Length: 283
Image 1 (cartoon, rainbow, N blue to C red):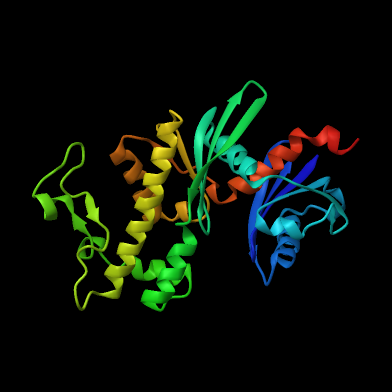
Image 2: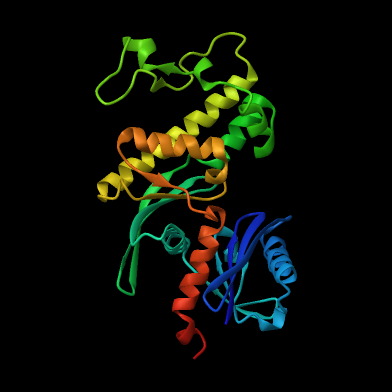
């Protein structure tokens, strides 16, 4: 049986193809709108893998753009999966854990608790934050004249966030409690006239990563899962960002991982959910 999972955004679709329970491939396509990107993702993944469109048993969709998809798409049977459930299922599957808090970083950040007991998986939306990739892009446009995430990271890699942030050492002259002296005490608290754009970019990256890492940690701690945090999405796969996320969680006393294929976790979760429902879907 072949299932394609789609995570459909406003202009980008991430696609993963599952055949007989195994992941065969994944792609992402950006286009002018959700329907175009979804069609493009299906076309690309089937072409890349040499799979005939007629052999696809089911398309499983999630994400904001899935609202525009009906019960059939490109002549194929289609179902929709709640995004929170897809986040939890995908994150759990990629991490290999039986329980975790999954933090999905997209335009904003959604945080989900997921637990597996036998064949039953329960997911619960813990909340999240409006801080995410959209924050980086928006502030980059306002402050740095960079309109793409690639352009932002190119600039941030040349900067040093310590030139714009204040540390605990700067304020009190030493560590506080469990926090070492070089811990950020105030994001952008050290900005001065003539601050380089590269340092501003590095400061933005540090601020967004620390906010998401901190919010996720405390959500996980409330669930007793602060040692089992999983970050998914495209941003966590970028080395500079992943290091900030994991080090922030570690500093607070938790543990976080970023699994392989983290970008496709939600698409995978949609496919997993559809597979669990497959018998009822084809009655």
